[in-house]
Length: 250
Image (cartoon, rainbow, N blue to C red):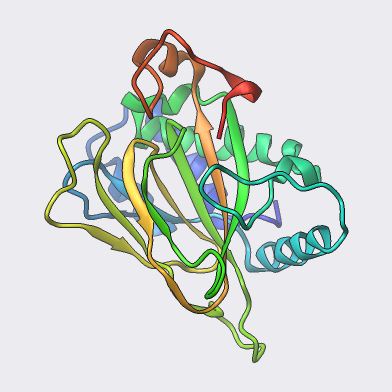
């Protein structure tokens, strides 16, 4: 599909083949030529990969601004961010269903087989916006998701040039939920337009302040009912009061 980075579709197809072959030990090396990188992390892997085309990122940012200016009711993206939109309110649910089922799930099955990667069956998708004087940063937190796909979609530079139109805003990863506290060494990840970070929802992370311009990201909390019933909520670990699918809170 033209809205995807062509390498992302190739990554999903190669991941399916590798999983069918029994996930050989050199599977990651087979994905690296297509743009996937495993970033350093002492507690759990964090992956960076190409997902969306630059054209689609620009078109999506334009659509978001039109909706924000429409005056229509707009839900808050989650309990921490004030700026952003729920993609289901814009009619993007079918597109995102395809994104998760056809592309994210095959990769997750290979890269996160013990975290429900192969059984992802629902999601909550939203955008977040960071800029000085508004939502500038985000405190350390976990996500209500088995896996999170976080894609930088903008914004474009004011001078019309390529690249990101913001400074700062790096993601910083710490330890795992229930792992006994944050580690001394942290992993910082910079953003690139159309590129994503794929990580465990239970992997503590935060967004550093944006010091110039505006950063817009598409965040997809990918969830697995089967994994959650067996292992509990990624936030609290409980299995006795689960709300599943569309009822799952932010």
